[in-house]
Image 1 (cartoon, rainbow, N blue to C red):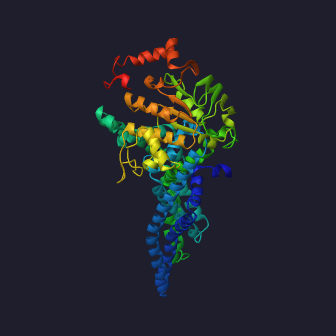
Image 2 (tube, rainbow, N blue to C red; image 1 turned 90 degrees about the vertical axis):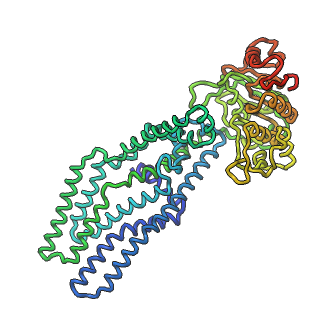
Image 3 (cartoon, rainbow, N blue to C red; image 1 turned 45 degrees about the horizontal axis):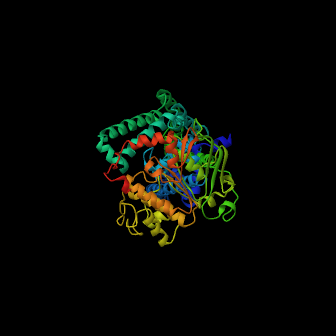
Length: 603
């Protein structure tokens, strides 16, 4: 029972507060309790004031107590709001830190591509952007305000025990009944249904289309601007409708609530009046008990659960992700250290035997008994239809996933036996969705650091020698930044891989590395790449056969297996799948010139 209670999102939220900032959390609770108790203290001070007037006693003490209490009630509220805002910001920072650790901690990437974790990942990633609810600094303040009322009601009930034992119990039960009658305790469940989460995703997606620069050109070109705004408006309206349905007064048994409250308050105030008329209750005490009897009403149905829902949802999502991501992104522990067996330097030989692999949540095997050998120092091009597994092969060779069965051997050593970090220092890769860092050109080419001479040489090999000064920031959002075209960014990504080769990488993986370059530029760049990587092993994935033909050997993947393997001339002579794909692509061009009117003989 206790473990179930502590596992609820609301309790997880309260548990995060001291972890985010212990000092602020203590101050937050102290101020919360003080604010909740002050209305009851003010009622007592008012009673003392009335008693002093009634008995012609000194007014100094009661006036000081009333004044101090009143001032504290005015002062502590903004102070508490400031503490709540700061604590909320610390909670946001804590959750973002924990999420970042959970995301980058596992050596693989299965946890980031697992659809079962995508909903929690969206909530945890977007909670402070104001799209799925108020940001955390407001949520913490909302929770504080609701708890202050709850504490105030309890404090008033405690004071009311001075009148009789039954009066506070009757009022507490009556006002607490509104929580059950109006079903506030079920709000958070209905705000976390699959339908609500789906509406949030659709609304967020439409919003990002509208405000992100990547989609701006095509939204305007294809007349999709109004459609995007309408889609966002419709999805957001639907989200609000679902959220309102979850937070409105549930079954609305208002008559029962009003009847119970009226009867309970009627009994208590009738008893207070009768005691005052009979002379058993002096006027000063009547004033105190009447005020706290009213104050007990602060326990009533309010926005506490709604506020806790918004604050606790991202906390619970992060807490669920932390234990779920670790096994989803785990890899078999390797033990071979740098400098031993395959941990040395130079070109590496790759051997795949009986390789089978399917993504954890996928419904098919990408590879089923794949066999392939890549001799050390050679270049291999991999071609095939979309979905053939070309990019997946690159992920497995980078050891972002482990195969389900079969082996990948590096210079005779099973890749799973190698230390992951040591192996990745031997691999340089350029993926289709390559990294664009809003940092200097130097840091984009060598994020882990490298001599400037190596960086400049890598840029020259990638055809970007005159791109910019090494200290130039590659982002337009900064005063000293600059923008790059898609092709220029691709050259920077290639330079990053070529710089890694100069630092000792022995395997280069190129997944559509020149997709944003023209045919002539692609051929020239790939010739430079082959020259720069002649002493290492290179594996190229590309759809452009003008580039593929430069490789030592070409592998055709189909249905998770190698169906053809050989040089360009050998595969053309074979007249099989490669020849068919090559001829289909060649039809796009004339016999003499490419799409830019340049002779193929000059490429």
